[in-house]
Length: 142
Image (cartoon, rainbow, N blue to C red; front, top):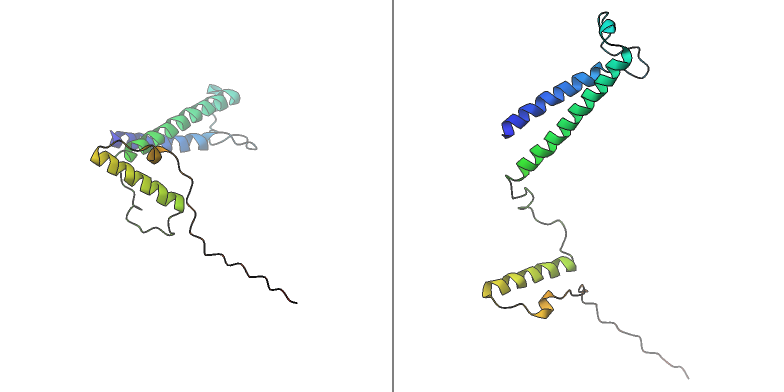
């Protein structure tokens, strides 16, 4: 099915390019359709109207097919190419808490015990341990 959709995508893109090139420009007298016999078949307003409709139809088919192909290809791969890479920065405190909460939940499911209410309640983000604060002792002069 993917192969058929890829072939449809190729033909749609080629037809879309051709139809866009055949259209009138704003300042041009006529696009590539300036053959002598074309004026007797269609008037300029009819030709422009048909070309706009064909372009819109091909654009919708192209975009829809692109989204469909992306969705089909996305379901084939469950792993990212960046999964094996090391993180660039250290984890944030909230990331570490989420990871710990996920590990607690997995451990609770593994032991099949009911999770405690504190495990399910949202917790405030942890702050890093601060350095001990030393206050200068006031000196009095007499």
